[in-house]
Length: 165
Image (cartoon, rainbow, N blue to C red; front, side, top):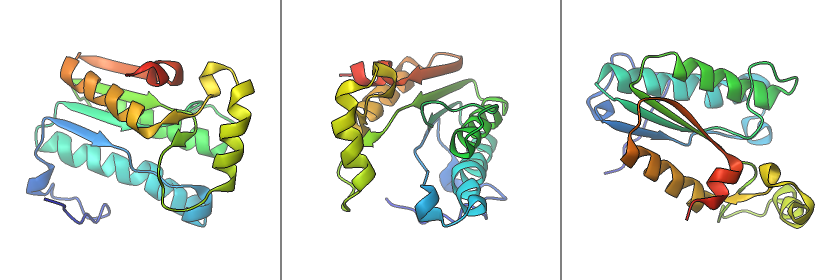
């Protein structure tokens, strides 16, 4: 059953936040967000609020879709925010955290994206770390990680995601 969520109002944690495994693929683009503050809210604040609410309700494994190049030390705003959300969620105390770091995600978005089409063509020359990956493969890799449910923090880099079958 779909649930409409206001990520700015997850205190106290709602009953639907009770789960063992939480998959978070929440994110936007700078263009869609409209500003750096709005991007940070969607890509950092909201996933962190979700993680806190679910942890408070007993979740043990948080699985996050991040991005290739994520790093708290990145000079690039996008990658720095992705690194910040990874670090913040890893520090919350989940039994398990799995972070997927895909490159360009491919899939049916319902809208034409020129940069995505250029990325597809250019990818034939890119090293495996930067080649696009289908959202379906990322999902398979995360489901597999949830089934293994290994303790600690595990990062799935783009080549591993591309190999998920």
